[in-house]
Image (cartoon, rainbow, N blue to C red):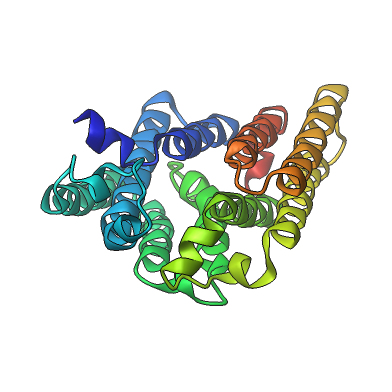
Length: 272
C-alpha cells in the first residue's frame, strides 16, 4: 500500500486537493460541500497519478527509473490499473452529490488528465490538457454551490496558467529520459531553459490575475503577490542552474498554494 501511495504522485495530488478546498471556502461553500469537493478532487488526482505511472511503466523500466514502484514491480500493473479506474469511478460518483454541473466540470478535469497520460504528453500540444484541466477546476468549485454559478474569467485563466506552469515544471527533470523513450511534448521541443521561462511567466501571470482580478487589492494580498513573484523567479533560477532538479516543481506547487490562498481575501468574488 505504501508503494501504491508513492505511485499516486502524492505531493501534487495533495496540493491540488488543498487548492480545491481553499477555493471552496473562498467561494462560500458549506462545510459538507467543501469536504465532498475535496474528496472528489482527491479521487480525481489519485486516478490521474496512478494511470500516469501505470501507462509509463514500460518506458520507466527502459530508462531504469528506480523511484517508480510500478516500474520496479513493487506494485503489479494490474493492481495499479484497477486502482486507477476505481478512483476515477469514485471521483465521478462522488461528484454527483454536488450536482450535475459540478460533475460535468469534474469530468472535464479528470478527462484532461487521462488524455494527457494516454498520448497527448508526446505531442506538441502536451500543455493543453493541463491548461484545460486546471482551467476547469474553478468551475468544479463554483458549480458545487446550491445555486451553481460560473467562475470568473480571471479565476479560470489563473487556473489554466497554473496548469501550464505545473506541466513544464513537472517535465523538466525528465527531459532526457523522456527523449530516450520517444516522448516529445512541448517542453522537450523548446528545451529546459525556455521551459523554465514559461514556468516563471505563467506563475507570475496567474498571481497577478488572482490579486488584481477581484479589484482593490489589500496589503495582505499584495504581500502574497510579492511572495508568489519571488517563487516564480526562484523557479526560473533553479532551472537555469540545474535543469534536472525537482525543486522547481515543488516550488510551483507552493506558488500555486500561495496564489490560491490570496483568494481568501476575495470572498465570493470568484463567482461570475
